[in-house]
Length: 336
Image: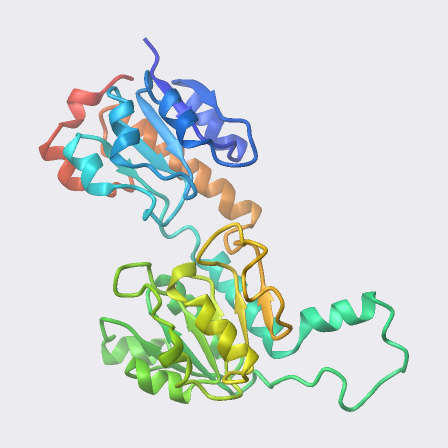
């Protein structure tokens, strides 16, 4: 009998093709995530689940699917998965790490340049018909990126990729991470270690590249925003809750910092009451860091590979919870 798989959203066709070759798929066709009731109803007789970052996969959902053997998420992040609950139930978890690095680093620089040079405001100005003189020496004055100081909070794969791009702009790269690099690595990335407080005080651009943990939630609060230069910009393409948006809105309104650029938010999609929406000195994007054809297709391929490997009795290439093998062996869940 072919395994049954519930897929919570349509993903690039390659991933669905790979899974459908071996499994029977039930696909949620909506543009938004399935409701909690729909999710619980559909996992009841499924052997595997392929979900997205926007799907909250709790112990309740897992208990509704007693046949679940593997949950594969189409995402690098996994804060939407109850990892201990899955492990205790012998459910293998897979995700799609590494694949987002270059696309996210590209978008980080796009955000930085857009904020520094007033790109979004200038585009709106032109489209609205307000451009009525050929040139002005004071029109949309921004800040020079070349030779400025870039502070990277978090220096993992994406932080390092951003640092390499910064070399092309002759930027002084400062970084803060829980693990300091070796001297050889610091030379490779032309990066200089700073405490978080030192980095915030010295940087012209502060770019966040941390995972979301209890320690990083609201890392950028009112106190830390107050440490930044008045001409500095905050960039966030990591996780929305790393920034206290109420505090950021206050900092932008009162001119503590020059501007900000965000691809992620505390609540997504952003509500109409979000305090950042009414501000001109912030660039706002709808979580598109990984939105390249190549990246999203590779994510689909990886998510499918994780799911199929487990069902074939093989270790998923990107297994989140290796300790699960002590609870239920791969030979026990093999179906293909």
